[in-house]
Image (cartoon, rainbow, N blue to C red):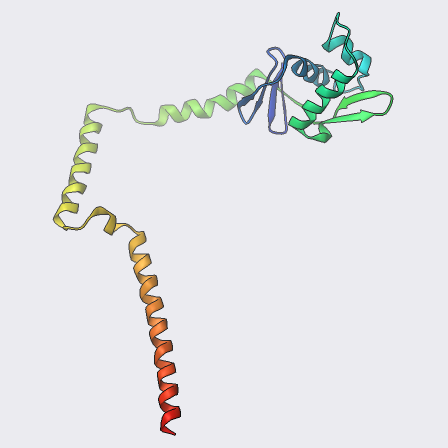
Length: 184
């Protein structure tokens, strides 16, 4: 079974956690604990239950429960697992079971997009090459480097020209003011 919550998806069978489709590595015990929390999200899980399930046939201290819960909270946020004093812990994030149909629906647009692209043929290659050669011929005829014809260049020149015009007008105003002061 796969479950989706927030920006994550967890495959309980394979114990694979993904965030936005990218795999996040989990330690085996943390993955087992996450699986147990998700499959029992409707109830509070005691420390003893967690120890028995995640560390079967092994004697470990309660500290490992705290460490793994802390690790899971670091990934999902502090609100993901709620502590109930002297009772245990409970998964708090809303879960949505991901069905096979939902996975197919998500995969369908990607496959449809792939079929909509035109296949590369010898004709399309030749057409593309002829367009490229035409554009390089026209650049050579203008005796101007291709970078001079970029759309950013005229904008830079017009800004420079505008500032020169403003500075020139300001200088003219100052010169007129000085001339008027000297004349009177």
